[in-house]
Structure formats: structure tokens, C-alpha cells
Length: 310
Image: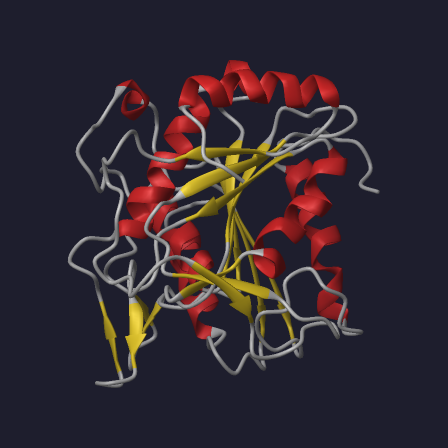
């Protein structure tokens, strides 16, 4: 979808909402501010993932240097709640359908505005470098900049989008789960202000962290030092499979322990089987029921009201 100016995006959003649901693409940064990615090797490309999930292929995007939001308006009776989806991909690529748009297919019929963040990759957050077999931290954490900016833009445009600026959360998978934890726990901006949107709050009101990585500091069972839980960290929902071969379940366990220690409301669901990178696709395993558990939790914390989940 072609990118639009912020003003044109606002007008298009109003039209889309009244027409019933056309998504709108929004550039994340004005002009050239924070655009570009020195680690990108060539133009942005879409391709297929190497494996099937739920018997179907999935799409990945690489070399993202022009980050953006795609806003999917709530359908039916809007709740005012918004979820910013952070696809996974190891901070190397983004699983844009499996861990992005397919989440919106589930959220929007429930009256929740869904926003997919296309954040910069590769090497835009902590990532596992196979050359040294070690975790590396970027000098400039571009993914965190993009996530903070996304929350601020949405709060600035809350009236236009028909959303509640105090009910904007994040939902991230794998590396996106780590990014959800990072944007939940950072009290300071990862970039200098560029316009009036940057006066808005940069943290989410709730967080959903699905099979995250980069949280467990090995060899000790402690939290990585770049994740600093504070009393302002939002209520958090955690999900992990104990047989995850990519991101050990201890990533979720240490984060849950830190949240509990700080007195932050947290709900964690652990399943014996499930593996990694299953998204919302049915796998025939009990872990596939997690969206229903999430819907109940969102109602319990007052994000979507108290109605019985469908």
C-alpha cells in the first residue's frame, strides 16, 4: 500500500471507518527522520518462510528501512481498545502475516482496532549473531524507537481513529515479544523528539508477550539488564510452550518473576507442547486455545469490558 502523508492518512482513516474497515498505511517518521537502516542489504523484500505453520506457508519481510503502521479499524461495536502487533523474526526479518495481519483478523471482529508495526530489521534489537555465537546489542535500538513512536502517534490521533488513548496495548511474538517487554519497561525515549506527537506517553497500557526471546540472562536465571521492570510497567499476559526449541521457556519465567516482584499484574500460561512460531494458527494442541484465554484476560483487566468472550 502506498505511503501517505499524516494529514491524508487522517482523512483516509475517517473514510475507511465509515465505509467499514479498509486498512490505512501510515509512515512512522516525518520526512527522513529516523528513516533508513545501515544494516539493510538492499531493498525491502517479501518472501516465504522456510517451514509450514498449520499446513500453510507464511510471509516474511526483510531489509526494512522505511517503518510504518498499518491500521485495521475495529468492526462491529468498537470497544475503543487498540492493540499494536509486533511481528517476530529474530530482529532479522518480520513474519508479517503469521504474527501480524492474522492477529488483526482475530481482533477487529471483536471491536478492537489492530495496528501492525513494520519496524526496522535486521539487527535493530538484541539479536543472536551466529558468527560469534553470542547475543549482540545494537548501538542504536531502531526497533524500540519505532515501537515508542508508534504508541505516540496513535495517542496523538486517538480522536480521529475513534480509540481510547488510555487503552493502547502491544502484542508481540518471539523477538516482537522481547520488543513488547522492552517498550513496556523503558521510561525514557530511545530518540530525540521530532514533532508534537513526541509529547505523548511512550509506554503501552497493557502488554501481551508471546514466546519471547532475549529476556533470560544466561547462565544465571536472571533478567537481561536491558529490561528494567518499574512500578509503571503495564499489566502483562505471557504465553510459552515448554518444548519451545528456539526461545527457552526461561525467557518467560524470568520476566514473570520480575513483574511479580515489582507488583505488576501478570498472567502466564505455560503449555507442555507447542513449539515456536505458531501464531494463531490451529495446531491440534491445547496451546491453540490461547486467543480465548487472552480475550478473557483483556475483559478481566477492563480493556474490552466485561461481556462474555465469543
